[in-house]
Image (cartoon, rainbow, N blue to C red; front, side, top):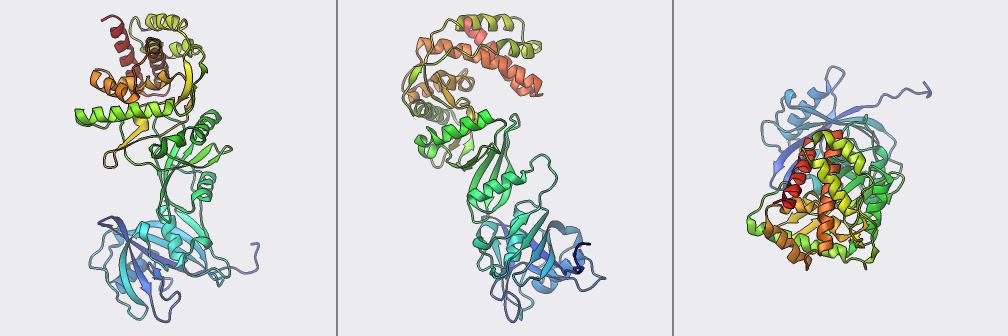
Length: 459
């Protein structure tokens, strides 16, 4: 033992009683009153163990009955978070916070000498003043942590203030959905305390994406790119041409090249991937997609003609896709590549690089189309942004026409030829990637596109 005094710190129990309110989840709080610590501040129903014969759960059940007049079944008590706390006066204690979502009775003040109010509050509208210790436990709970340290400094106020937020979450062992501690720290330096992390990573991608909810309100997206190239592309686009799209795209809040991480403002709407709409609404949305593509491609002056089509990886992709190709697919792919090699180069403009329905969000109420995910953005022929969109309008000439109307022009013959070639290359690449990563949906999409393109060549 390194110290000269063994600590015997008291243990508190705290009730996080949660219910579904009109605007979302709510938590029960009481206001301390009288000759007690932190009088006038809001706090959770809480208390100490009565002695060595009382366990933590029994103490919580007792405090719920004594303070709030509700009966909690021990079987309904759930462990939430444990907080090692030190007050500004230098006294330390262990707080064990429990979640309860079911009880008998209506919560009401029972101990009027130490409490003068008891109310329900939305988690994103917690009252002030609030005991900093209690707020730390709730913030840690909302962040999904299992353990935290909250050591206040001498002179810190008893009531919570963001200027003296001492909460430190203790990281858990890594696993799916876990936010690395260094990424948490980077994001919180950018936007302040984050109390909620939701993993929203796309199943096919190695990049990681989380939706982050702030302690003071606000929502952001935190993304870690799978390689330096994707990070540089996305940051360059977000600092370069993306701001010209206005509210249709997220804004870059912070970037860290060492972590390959970014913090972005959240955009609204619902992903178009898998969404269904009436035909008239579909045409309206696709018209907006065309307008958005035009805004992207005209966000900077065009440059000299771009290089040749990306044929260098064809053999590697064919090797990975061959077992899944239909008879004649490989010959068709090679013939297409041979013709594409002789196509004229097209001028280069800013492109999204992965413009497809899953990267587009439609907010019907606000009448806004949003675009996200710029890690494949680079200068190139404008037609590359229509490769994956062409799957979405297949069999629907009205949707293709809606895109063209929004775009403001039809494709030139040279662009049509490049679009067909790029679609073939993208299909083979997708089949190869899907086969290697156990993604049958991606394999099937590539096979379906090849069949469509072959049928279009020989109607």
